[in-house]
Length: 230
Image (cartoon, rainbow, N blue to C red; front, side, top):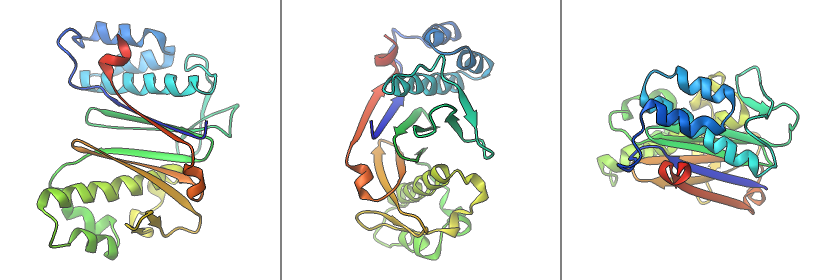
């Protein structure tokens, strides 16, 4: 398999696919009882759709390994990161933001993050970014929207590192630094490689443990919910 990345847009449904609760649960009928119950517990329609999307992508990715989302046995590490109990060498990670759901599956340790680009977040850069990263944001050639996009780019890169290492909030975001070279580099003791995607209004990043050779076999798919559930 190496690495497979799936992106799913659960927003902007076509008029012939009204996403009321019954329809959402119908779409979830092929997923595990755990996922169906999780979707049902969600209070808001948007959260139900995001959880549905995560389940659908998880099902899609596990099939590539010959596994089933309905019967897979998941366990959780101390930091809460899920893994396949009986397949420790098969790695996956999930993320969502706005209407986008992201899933990555890999033969290598992997983490991913997708974030909607929003304004008004630059003020927190001094708390979470290094001086060098703040200097990137201070470039006078950047427009306001360009600065927002760059902030989100750095944020997704950093979050993808936290998720591949499993450190979560136990590792401060400003304890490591990104160099936005080609390829992107990060100041950590171990070698990591990165994939980045720019969607309309979103940034996404994937961190894979290992050198550039781990990116020799990568597949990426961009889908809309109405194309998956028809």
